[in-house]
Image 1 (cartoon, rainbow, N blue to C red):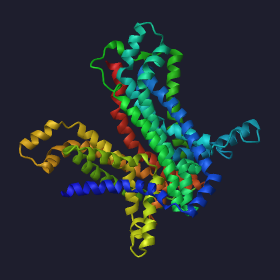
Image 2: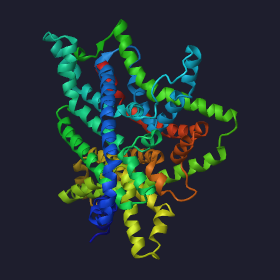
Image 3: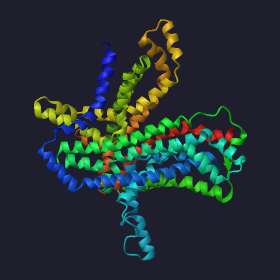
Image 4: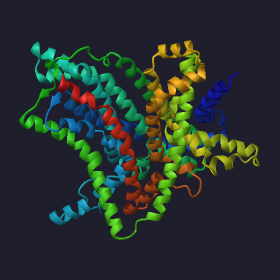
Length: 541
């Protein structure tokens, strides 16, 4: 059997093992498990379920409302500032949701500067609004951070045919409201559902916002079952409920993606009659305000709050600059190693699928990419559960040391979680390489490996570089897996931002938080550059 085939099989096994271990936890059912589950059913499980569903519902309303309105405004209409807002609306992707939570908690809480100033001006003695650390507060923060998923896909769908069909509807006598709600938005409905599915998966996977706000979701419940209750089996069994919810969201995304083909074919030609509708007066002002508000609330204001906290901390000389360099180096090191491994394994899987596109290779590649939809806390449970079993059977094997006292376990979790990002980029690069190119290379005497190194790799370099950057930044922002699996003295920017903010040391937490935002800006700016044409084309045809 060829070595590359063995490596591909081992890679797929490595990436799906954590999920299989979580599902296998139900085979460890015994009388003690029944007692534990009776206690969970009587106490926290109903709250975990209801809170997770409520949070998903509120976030769904938020991201669909914000993302759809913004996408429709910048695609269907022309108003001052439209081109700039087209990419500015992507900026909240660079701001981790837990950083937004830190900023607004400090600014809006009872003892925060805004309420103190308002009480001073009005003489009011009590709280001026409900505590931001609540389910509704978490929903607002996640909505402001995740709406770009809906915005991106909805904008791409609307840019394809909506302007032309809206013009045709206008010529048939339909008024503007009907053209938007009966023509444009139905075209974008599959894209909206696909973006919503991505936002829902991120909501279910969230740990930083829910934990910081004290919201009892499945992610925080799994973490508590493992570390507080010290019950690995219960944590794994709780993880299966979260996996079921993720599977439902994946099914919805699959259905929406199957319908996207009807709205993603670009028209062969565009005429001047398909230009975006020019707005004037208060209509233009309204469109501008609706697009500016998400950018202000999701990026600019949190950035200013954290910047002010950083400045105040620097004035008081409490900023841990020396320790910060260690956190920064650890984050860069983990991100770089994970990104290189992820891109290398993605190239291995994608090249194997390219050379022999059998059903099994397609299926195994899809399995390998499922980890991105799985919450980090579930991956952690899936890694540590078999480790505990191995330690009980062979206590002197040293397996526990290699997976928890070194970087191996953490790198494994990162690969399971983020190899899908690299796979998507590499496979996208392969779609731009014609099959006739491979056939021509073989006719000239090149073997399989020569075809890859001489033909594929030079053409895949841009896609590989994009994959490397995306995985690198995602690893730097990952919180739950790093929080549990990191070895001693391997604190990262994400972990220290969480711990310092939890200890109400926002001035110190601002330093690693802003470093994460700066790192996140790189892929967002690249994405904005790639998406620029979809904003400009309607007005340039």
